[in-house]
Image (cartoon, rainbow, N blue to C red):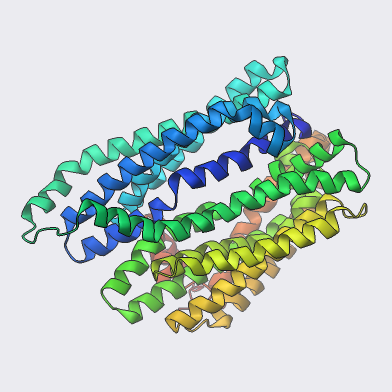
Length: 507
């Protein structure tokens, strides 16, 4: 690990402020674009869909530029008043250009997603992450000798470079299909009757509730930023140790539990226009089947991810950060993966149904629970930062379960707990036993190569074995069906044929 726990803490102190201002600059508009474009295209109104995109692009570019300037000029103030560490000013300045690029990028992503084209978004996300990591790593190595705040600023600037690269990919994708889309507009017989003010009204009617919801998450992070170090000091830790422990929570364990959400976020992005289309066409059976499939796929991913992160928490933190202590925090947060992924999916379903405020309200109640529990448990010396992790799990649990209840009430969808919960739990239990056995055996086999290398190799082997075991057990118990496999691009038909040849495909 190039920077210490304290350096990670400084890096993470910039992110709550950045993400809050980013939520304000984008203002839930990407979700509104996605829903409105999907509804217009479902009714053959390509001209209206394009005008919605143009209007939203103009709004987002203006908001993004204003908020970028606010963050750049106010970095010292935000660092002193919110982060309560003047060293966080440099990371805030470095990350400020990312707000403009992400704001513009989100307009393009919403437009593509409204057409149910996910490949441009996926390619831009890949370019964004690769550029962020590559540039951030190089800059950290160059600036680390100047001090921790310079290294944290270098890592933050990687986010700006990544956002610029992701935007370039989306602009290129649009120029490649622009002529085809405009041919649809020219062939459209009916005129688009919406005025510019009507379009703005529609966008903000949908966007404002989503904005409130998207603000809750960064505001929770800001509360953690203020509350966790404060309560850790109340538990008896000095300022440096409190920042280091906060770094383990916010900079190590939390990013790991968000890794499975890469898939569920993509699923949620595709759900909003898919649900909106089914609702616009009044196809209730299609709406129910899409909602059920999304929830089942979410649990098929979230349950084994939680098991695996709990069982391999310490080896994973040693592998990624060379920090065994952070594994204690990760083990507590692991259960939160199920609730976090489930919340994202069900919130997207509710947004697709036009119920924009329901997930906001539910997340607000979850945030209240999280804040109260963080205050009580983090000050206990025997729990310290693990108390904040418990609070996170409980907060997302409340929000996710409220969402699930409301989705079921609004869609009339049958939850089918045998398929959605018990079969994945059974397969995950078998996977967990295999992972524990594999890790112990592999660590012993690789021990002559040194403790660090043995842990890395054993962790990688255990993860690979766990994935294979879980997939195999799901096939055996019927947790994955033929139609599920065929949803996988390219490899789906191959896996289906192999499973049928081995007689392990049950449905």
